[in-house]
Structure formats: structure tokens, C-alpha cells
Length: 87
Length: 189
Image (cartoon, rainbow over all chains, first blue to last red; front, side, top):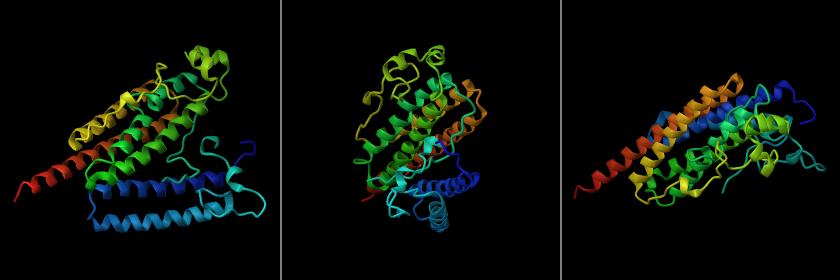
């Protein structure tokens, strides 16, 4: 990428990666422990938290997910924001 | 279907241009026990595995694709600024003459990926034991790469991936127990 990204980009992205790691880890655990109610509660909690973080991230740095709203009427933001191997 | 997110599962930072390390990492990109082999193996086995463990194969396969992207990012970042001379010094001259700086599904010795690396026996226990072995082999490979690496930033990401292999292996072992329990219950009639 030509223009450097602000520190905040990496900070928020890392928070999302952390939350999604918890979601993924609980998902695999629940695949083999499907009746663990505490784990299901934690899964829902972190899934919700991850969605909140992503909404905040996308409003500042552009779409993170396919299907997210394009913020502009004139520019296609998906191909403008950096790809994971470029940051 | 799948949907894409513009992020890696875990951050990948690279300290310096290092095509030698990139060459080692190709073992986890297009090698027999690498992330591509893992993703394709589980994704394909899930159709015929008993229902109770389909979700596990599906979800681990999905995570393996995220690991494949992390390995690709490592190789890309370690080689993107390398000169032809640096690539030659790293033993990547043969790669360069065919692919320039493009990535390719080769192992560390330059052998292209083949579906013969993976199995689908249709027998659930046989398939899951193969999956456990694959995770243990991938874990060992990560350790050997970490032993060879002098890049502290990269080693942090490699240690994350090594630990994921441990978790996957553990989950597959639990899946075996789930299927054994199910089999034993069926005998009671």
C-alpha cells in the first residue's frame, strides 16, 4: 500500500482478530461438546462482540466483509482498502 | 458457500526480506502436511463422515484456509523485495525462472502439490486417524521451521499456527471417541 495506515487500524483489527479467535475456538470446542451451556453462552457473547467491533472498524476503514454496505455512492470501497497481505 | 473477510486470522509481521525462510515455509504451503493439503483433506472427507462430526471437519477445514492465507502472506512478504541474486542465493533460482515472484503450490524442495498427499478412505475411524496424524506432522513441521528461523516477528505467527495444530489434533481425537461411543451404543439391542 502506498499510503501508510494509522495505528488505530492495526489496533482495531487486532481486537477483531482476538474476538474472532475466541469465536473460532469455542466453535471447534462446541463441535465436540455440543451440550456445554456455558460455552454456548460465551460463544454468543463473543459473536455479538465481534459484530460490534466490525461495525466500528468498517465505519472508519471501509468494508471488511463481503456483503457489507458500501459507504460511498460513487466509489467501490471493497477494492480500495488494503488486502491482508498488504498491511 | 464461503464468504471472505479482509483480515488474517492472526497478524503476520515480517522483520526483513528473507527468501531462504520463504523457501522453508513453502513446505506448509504446497507440501504433503501443509495447509493446502489439510484444508482439501477435511473439506473432502466431510461429505461421508458421520453427521456428528461433519461440523468439526467443516470448521477445521475452513480454519485451514485461513492458515493457508497466513502462510501465503509470510512467503509474499519475505520475498516481495528480493532481487534475483537474493533468490538465487536462497536456492530459489528454479522457482524464479518459472514463476518470477509469484507464489506456487510447491513444497520446500520445489516439488509441486499433488492430491496423492491426501486420503479419503470412507471409513470414519481411518479418516480421523489420518487427520490426527496430519495435524501432528504439521505441528512437527512448524517446530522444525521455527528452529530454522531467525525472524522473531515471524516466529510469533508460526508459534500461533503450531498451537492450532495441537488444538485440531485434540478435537479430532475427541471426534474418534464420539464415533466409538455411537458405535458401541448401536450394539445394544
